Image (cartoon, helix red, strand yellow):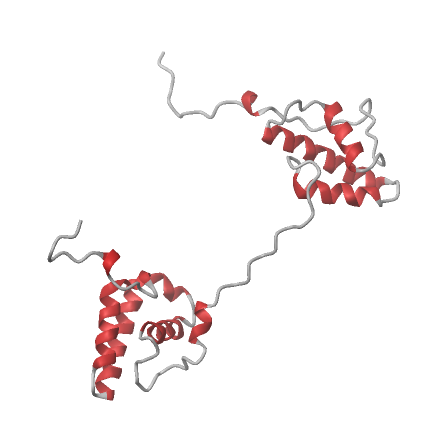
Length: 202
C-alpha cells in the first residue's frame, strides 16, 4: 500500500551505520553541502558530539574519538572536505569483515560425543600405559557418560560407555567395569525440579 505523503523506511536509501539513525545521516549530508570549509568543520564537531551521545558505550574505548571521526568520514561517503582532527586514512578497516572460520573437514564417528571426546580418544590410542593414561581414561569415560545424559541418547549405562570407548580407541582402552567407578549422573527426566520459591500452604 502506498499512501501519498507518507515516507516509509523501506523506500529510503539504506544507512551505512544504522546505529546512529537517519537524523545524524541527514546532518552529515548537510555538512558536506556547506560551501565554507570552516563552517563544515564546526558542523562536523557538533555532529561528532551528537554521535557520542547516541552511542554512550563508545566511551569505554580509549580511542573512541578516533572511532567517531572514522565513522563520520565513512558516513559522509568520504566526501566531507575538512581539516580532520584525526587521521582517517585507515577508517575503511572498520568495514572489513573477518575471514570465515573453516569448517572441520573430518567427520565425527559418534556425533553425540562431539569433537572433544574424539580428540581425547585419539590421544589415548597413542599413550603408554601408566597413571597418566589411566587419569585421562577416567576423564574421557566420565565425559562420554555426561554427553549421553545431556543428549538423552538411548541407554546411558556403563556398558555402553565402555563399548563406545573401546571402539573409539580401536580396542586400546578396555574399561574394567568391576573396578572402574563412574561419577554419578542423573538423566534429564530424573533431575530434581527447580524450587519455584513459593512456600507451601500449611
